[in-house]
Length: 72
Image (cartoon, rainbow, N blue to C red):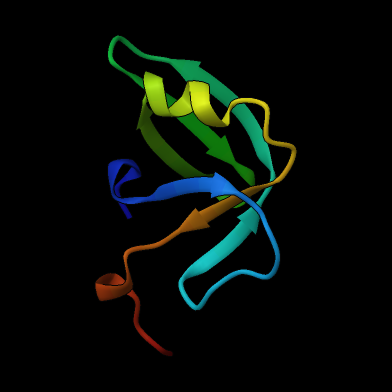
């Protein structure tokens, strides 16, 4: 997945069908975006304003685009 395709939110309850709880490892500032690096090598790019809304979360939920998931 490309980092800009993924969405982040605070973890509340159990994950949905296309969500996964992950640990935030590092935040990298970019000119217009913030790159969030999660466990498992997952990268998410979000606008600075969105990051500011989520920055204090202790637990994060990553949402993958449902149309890109395949069952193996």
